Amino acid sequence: MSAVETITQLANSIPEKLSLRTTSSPQNAAEAQQQQVAGQEEPYRYANLLPVFPRDEHYPPLTPFEHVDPGSRALAHPNPRAFLEGASSIVDLTPNLGTEIRGINLAALDSDGRDQLALFVAQRGLVVFRDQEDWFNRGPDFFLEWGRHFGRLHIHPTSGHPEGYPELHLVYRDANSTFNFERDDSITSTVWHSDVSYELQPPGLTTFFLLAQPTTGGDTLFTSQVSTLKKLSPQFVAFLKTLKAVHSGFEQADFSRSGRRGGVVRRDPVEHVHPVVRKHPVTGEEALYVNRQFTRRIVGLKREESENILNFLYEHIDKSGDNQARVKWTPNTVVLWDNRVTAHSAIVDYGDSKERRHGARITPQAERPIPAWDGLDLSA
Image (tube, rainbow, N blue to C red):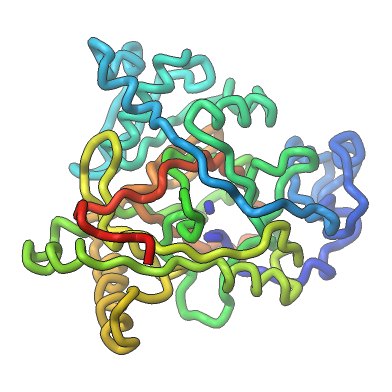
């Protein structure tokens, strides 16, 4: 998650025996496995997946590429939901957002099954798979192979990643340390967003799982941006379709440059213009595409006009409980969502427990957002 999880602190405050380094000297998995995380009597099972922040790690700007959504291939299948055959339980979390599934081994899905999964996630917005022990036993090489089926893997410009696996975006917090993008000057930890929406080609299908979770708390909220759009009047939606907005990664980069999160910026920040209302390339559904974390202004409007419209939309997203679903994390849970039609936020309510929350996100990029109105010019 992306830019979403927990309150951050200076990287220099990490105890040395935590394998969360911010220096240029890398730490390999063998070293990490030998160390004990603070307060634990036994080595941490996923020490090889703890975040590192190499100071000498830099990447060039991302280049455009052609994305073919795997969900489009599933449309030609005689049964696009064949991958669900054998499921022991399929329960919709809400009428319009979210489905929880048991009895399907995600890690064992073949290419057709993954295509069908992509279509199903696009249709439901959010899909929760329980009891995925096989997934967690596969390891980081499998996680990358999984993600590449759905698109070009994104390397986050500021977050931590496991040593040697920059394509795995990590969130991490324990009793002594936290390495995520949040503000500690707000009355709430809720920050609705779509992951790295400032990229020219933001993510589509996204996979996230917790390697460690608190006993209670640390849930993730999701909202359907299809439903939030449908709640608005047709006249207002027609107006929104004519608008485009700037999404920026500069604030996130400045946050890290100030010494927080991990203190590294491995790719120069960017900002891009996207439609305020986008269209999904496979389902054709239209969705609101603005978020508090990365959307900065509406192009062509006066500052007051832009701020009033965006603040109205942000508050609409915040308050629309009837468009939302909440995922409670349990061991061996894997969650997938489509960043093109949803927004989400972590809930940081477990700090007093001093328990660890350690998650990994696999973030394939998708197409440049398609305007819901064909006449919208994104070049200016």
